[in-house]
Image 1: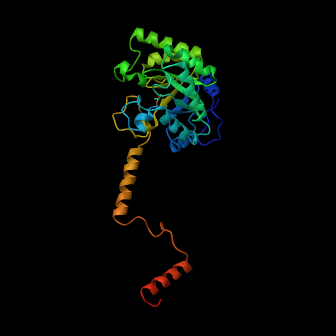
Image 2 (image 1 turned 135 degrees about the vertical axis):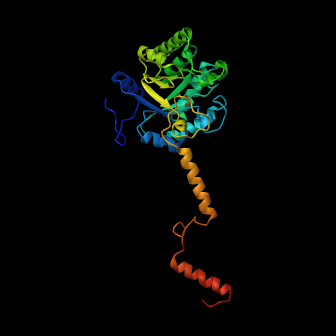
Image 3 (image 1 turned 90 degrees about the horizontal axis):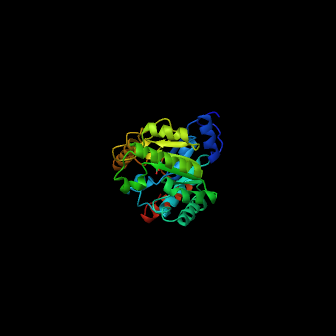
Length: 296
Ligand code: KIV
């Protein structure tokens, strides 16, 4: 399989494409997107998977963590991204509380992401303890992406956003989680915030493609948060974040320039204004002149 150059016509990415890429050692690329414009731009750049991550709670909605974002909010953003995406596999994140309660909830809500949001797969955080409900959703023909390691929905249980899998016991636990999800048939497995060595072991062990974020270069693919790579977040970035653009600087400069142009009457110019047709303008001048008692 060859890498599609940017701008070339491309095929639709499916769950099968991800497996093929793993088999051929071709990296899988994934970015988050949360609206029509970014979904479209990321898709046009030939990224394989577009994830409507629940990180939108912080990046788009300004919540403190991902726990508060609702199913309706996630659906709203998924629908917007769907309208911009043609080729990438569209994965929607199931928000906290939408699948952890019962398998019935998981299936009902996953179905909503497919039917109402246009998602092609859903992502659920958690390992072995989620396997039964993940199987139930896959049995209903909905592909599921797994997500283990530093799972932000477990922030309170973890006692903060901490790198996971740092002891032999924790490594064993992570490996068991990965194998259980692999056997359940997940479409891919997100590995977040774990040591490179552990991610490499898991990647070698499982058939499903692993997609790392803060999990080192041996994963089968990499994902980053769109707002992180574009400098659209406001805190100190995590160690693994690489900035590829500075949208914050662009926006600040553009907004400042607009304000200054308006204050100094440089915007809008005559060219940026609409005009009356010549005969209407002349008729209007006649009417105005009559009103003022002046002969045109
Ligand atoms: O919500 C998100 O953006 C994610 C990725 C970081 C994997 O879950």
